[in-house]
Length: 485
Ligand code: BES
Ligand code: ZN
Ligand code: ZN
Image (cartoon, rainbow, N blue to C red; front, side):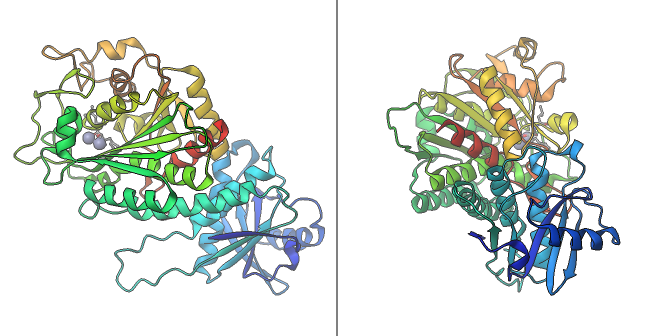
């Protein structure tokens, strides 16, 4: 979506539709829109529109089309609702055949700054144009849409970021939504290489032979039951200070998780094509980081493998060796994400980074704890965890911290190896998985793990998006990295 700025007031814009946000029945138009506000409020009073989160209505008014979009009550507000309201408005507008949209450059909404509003609403509007139609026969190429922010914008950073982040999200969404047969690890690697070429990142890909040479026993053990070989994909953004310590972002990229020999039940197994979404969030964030040209060096690592129950598959009871030398007894082959990540984290640590953040659709237990309302965050460094939580608040992606007690590590004692990939008690699934990962990160490197199992995709249509990948995590990672420099 092309996003521009215009000094012509909203009410005088000649666009297909004007978007106005409502917090309940409270109009969020800034000062100077008295006439528009009065007319629209009068129309809304007589309608069923209540400004609830996700509610959208189109009002023809004096030769113009106004899309009123709801953010919900002030007391339940978080930034994600603003982004979603923008997406819902554009999605509804697109369905009505509109292509050009306008909204004010300023907003009167809780304590949201105008810059935050421009980023959230612009990015949301771009997301609202997205449609995954790759496999729909006869689908037409969607038209190029535009958004105009009306008013005076002295600093265009947020508007530009919205446009660049929108491009990054939409292009990666087409990859993230591909099913397992269309997106094996090799395909993810080719896609990453191409994206790196286009955005100025460098890209290194390790295939089976190199992973064997390096001793990456975790990712190899996950892939060995599949006809598709694993890839470790490493993307690098140089930044402006090559001597600065890098940040490393790591993503679980399991292109399909059947469970392996510990086969998952059939019901809902198709959703496991989204088990690559940690990696997809990292790919998106790396693209955003490159496009926004942030100054800090950032490295993105994707551990890509398919978890299948082929005749060479890892068996429960097998003992494998991680890149960092620790041995692991695989008691359940469905707890494969941690096996991929243990090698990726070991490799990440070699860069002597200032911080490592990993993202993974790691545990069903995370959905039990938080549903799809927030992702879990756990880590070894309070400051890093808090920074990420704060960036999540700004970016509209909510994180909720869970503890990393030593009990969880003790619970993974193995009779035959250094540790097992399963807890004895079976409790605290999300924290146990994080405690497992912690074993592969040196204590002196600040590290945080985000379990995005409940947030990485949606299964039923929402006003702001159709079922599919959400790319949760990319927005907050870009926010966090940009806040560092
Ligand atoms: N990819 C799954 C976790 C998952 C499940 C994500 C449902 C999203 C929705 C992961 O690899 C897995 O299967 N984890 C197991 C771990 C268990 C065997 C310790 C789980 O959560 O059941
Ligand atoms: Zn699994
Ligand atoms: Zn998995």
